[in-house]
Image 1 (cartoon, rainbow, N blue to C red):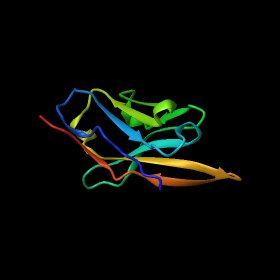
Image 2: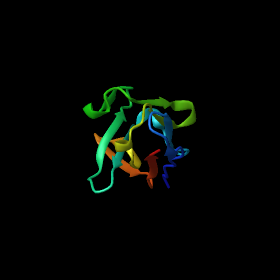
Image 3: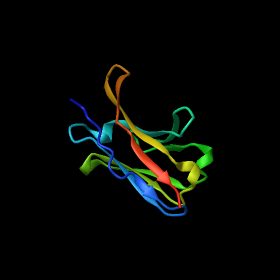
Length: 120
């Protein structure tokens, strides 16, 4: 019932920007926590960024301010703006959304993943 679409991935050159989108047409982004994880070749899947229902954002230290996560409630969309991309940013990026269902309990949904390749 709940499906997350992740347009925006692709091939970019080092130093260029790229914006990923996480779209949940049938869900309430405003009341959910949405995050982005990534899995680089030969590595485990790790957190990239997340935004809470209250608008608070968190990023891994290694990003050093290059990535920005934002939310547009009217479009049920969360964006991941990636600037100054580096080859080491190459990975499959996964959107995830935690939807509250009451009593402090939430249900988590995942996107299928989108490939981001940074190469010259």
